[in-house]
Image 1 (tube, helix red, strand yellow):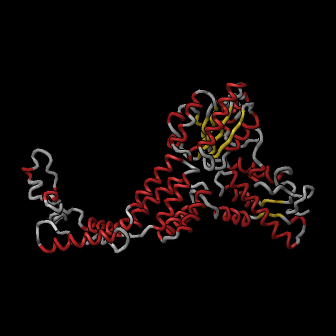
Image 2: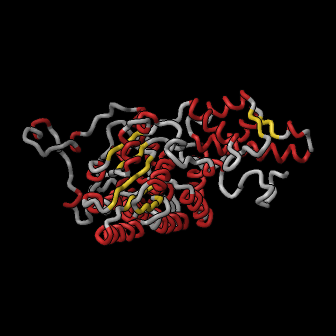
Amino acid sequence: MSLFDDTPETTTFPIAAPLSSRMRPQTLDEFVGQQDILGPGKMLRAAIERDELSSAIFYGPAGCGKSTLAHIIARRTRARYETFSAVTSGIAEVRKVMEQARVRLTGNGQRTVLFIDEIHRFNRAQQDAFLPFVEAGTIILLGATTENPYFSVNSPLLSRARVFQFVPLAADDLRQIIHRALSDEERGLGRTPAQLEPDAMEHLIVHTNGDARRALNALEMAVVHVAGLQLADSPREEDRLRISLQHVADSLQRRALAYDAHGDMHYDTVSAFIKSLRGSDADAALYWLAKMVKAGEDPRLIARRMVILASEDVGNADPLALVVATATAHAVEYVGMPEARLNLAQAATYLALAPKSNASYVGLQRALEDVERRPAASIPKHLRDASYRGAAQLGHGEGYRYPHDAPAHFVVQEYMPPGVKSGPYYEPIDIGQEKKLKERMATLQRIANSGVRGEP
């Protein structure tokens, strides 16, 4: 029998879906963990069993059963069940479903359960769209989120839903899930001669941090890897699929190399994106942007990084870059995903091809160094606030020359603190719009150097 044979008669386990998907519990009795909210007699379990659910938010880390419970509800409920991912679905699609739910409720009295995975990905305006339908009882909203709903879900919506907190699975829970996967002949690895060594089991449990999905996917990767190695060597039947600690460790490492929104690959991908923008490679910027979007990266983070880059790396070479980046950040909040990826792409290509200057950034760093060296530098009296009664008695504002009183709106006077003469900080370059600023700066400097107190 071949582990990789395609025929139904000889397939050791189905390979079309990951092990974590195949082993997903189908009933409440199969569900492992979360006994504080799903144990016998608990409110949520009773509501599911009686098919009397009200709107709820499932909050907890990845792989602890939030989506699985939603699938169990889908199998049990007499209501129409609809599911969406906030990463890939737009609010227009959801609105269409909610309108169909209204028609269904008024037509034949059938309720609709609407499950939104990663509901925190919807922005405030998108979340507001659910409110009238939840309020009217048109839909029963179930939302799953890994982020604290008290920060990521609108208060009006949150007040109409019960929050159930899921916790990482305990070691015994993971052990039960892994044993079930190894023994299940229909959905799991039961028809393979796979044997997980005790220290490998413990390593798998400890290093998956209560995440059943990650544990099962790593287990499957180890089995497939060992099968490929050992079948080629044609060892004894009983030794074919002996999974060691090293095999499990390697599988967990391979999983870690995938994009992780909180791991090193997350930071490396963002870094590659920013460096591509800075390096004026629009195609590379779009590639890394696409990778982040596909992986479900928070679009607000991407937009925020582009706003920073617009000032740090484009600066006054193209002042419009900051306008474009800021407008994109607003568009992400206003439009939401998936459509907002178009806004992100437009901004990324603009920033990549904009003329570059880091003169503002370098100037700020120089000024910060001076401030650090001279933290107690005093403010010249003519620059101090003279707007309040008694300021004149303190000499505040005395000798200040108002630039707009001069024909060219410029006068020569000292603006730096006494003793701070280590500039220049800002040195514009001969690129883009900054070239004009450099020329203007040179003109002003000539006037200042001439000792003339008037305008240029």
